[in-house]
Amino acid sequence: MTTTKVSICNEALNLIGAKSILSFDENTENARRCASIYDSTRKALLRMHPWSFAKKRVQLAPVTTHPTFGYRHSFPLPKDFLRIINANVEDYEAEGRHILANTDLISLLYVSDQDNEEMWDSLFCECMVFYLVHKLAKPITGSQAESDSAWTKLQNMLKQARAINGQERPAQDFAADYEPALMGVRY
Image (cartoon, rainbow, N blue to C red; front, side):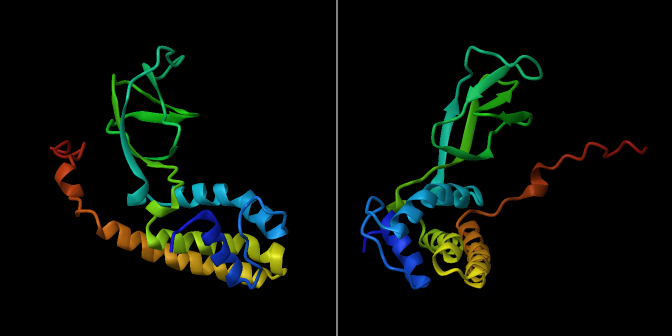
């Protein structure tokens, strides 16, 4: 089965015993509710973890407008940017839709707004369903308990999804790059 916005919303609606929808454009309360929260829910969930399927790499060049103070250059963020994973510079600051830094180039690893559901990890899909249930349960069923239960299930699923997603990367040796600034100062 193809994973789509509608199929994900229908799974959430089915979990709370609500009627399914055919599209976000249909003239039903459930379709309007799903359409109004879907994109913001996806973006929020993507920001919660550096999901492998949503990672992108890009090199950023500075714009000609410089920051007034503090940094030499300003780098515009990509249109689909949601979260910085690594900017590959030691001193930088995200400000608005720019990264400010004292370097001439930024190699940015970031979480993108991956809106193609076919690219999503299956555990991310499950998290999205529970997040939608959390947001839809109270308005549709009137049950705060059902909404709270979905939130708890989302938190548990997120833990599992993050752990599995993290296992798909090689281990990092943090101590190998550590140079203590105060080592040897005492003597």
